[in-house]
Image (cartoon, rainbow, N blue to C red; front, side, top):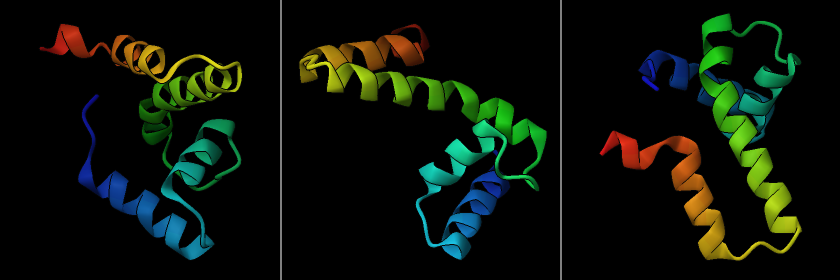
Length: 82
């Protein structure tokens, strides 16, 4: 996933103006509740949001931290990247 620094700056600026976190803004983008965000940004962050939400569910189910880390590495394709 290649990030455009301007996109990140837009997300951070939006978070600052809304007095929330950048991740909340990213979730709003994916949920379609951040109306004036460009569609390419939504496509780029959707996979990340899906993974984070899944990790939250697994953590709530009591999955061990080591397993959450492994699932994260698998989910982002880190080993393939190496």
